[in-house]
Image 1: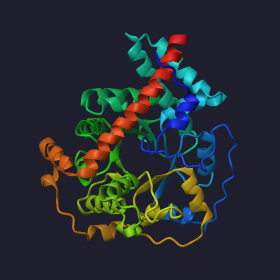
Image 2: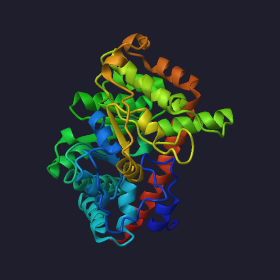
Image 3: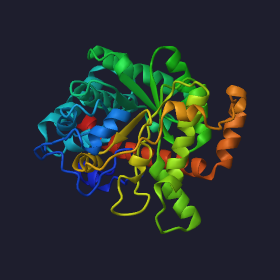
Length: 379
């Protein structure tokens, strides 16, 4: 079997794979945390008055620093980063990896594959439970992306993750089960939501995905405005920047938000994955253009930029204005599978980026699986 260095995996993770984006300024997990100072006049403080903010990071030190400002209530992350840190020598993360492997081995699973799968889930829950001690709000834990087209398996995996959290005294009300917004993922969320298990539908690149998630009762969606902008620029062969209000990702998220408010959907709109609409030097463009949306998850380097600026922020989204927008009902209020698949197929960005995102998630999951396999076999 091919051997993977977890440190090498960390450096190799492409920005298209996860909502957590590694920027050049992002610090190593092993370094001491910086001290975050947030003025009440800062853009971070202003934005926190309009939108509930989450930090997009797996670094417990960084999460703790930003949570201490009182401006960040939630955290989104991926277990891959914990495994990377754990096998690179940091004793905190190494303990999480070791516990996950030990837990899985003691569970007497029927085969090695099931043991490794359980260890990966346990690792994610170990990270999530640690984050839950730092932030007061939601933590997200994702289902294996290879199950993105298997509703029943996704439901069972979501239930298992929630039970592991319960065993660690983390109530299910604080956990969001993250699922790819395929038809099968959306249907899995529908089942889990009826059981009181809240879901975060991710890899949202199209309006039809957002509408279907809300119609099936998803608690929260994570649209990716930056990735939508990427696709639009590539599709049009465009290299120049655009005004944030003309940014295709911003336009798409606004349309989703407005539709939810017009039609009384309680699904939370939490954009993630950001790009500078106008190009380098304007990294906050999309964030500021969506100020006022329900929630946002933002990586530490962009939170740092928000904390450093005291320029005034104008609220761009609000419930009352959204309710006045033109948002015709889709699918008679509950589209079926055939309509969903047709509309998604006809949306170039949604179709292409969803497939790309799942492939990237699967690729990185398989790297993690290889590393955990080595640990399991060595135990």
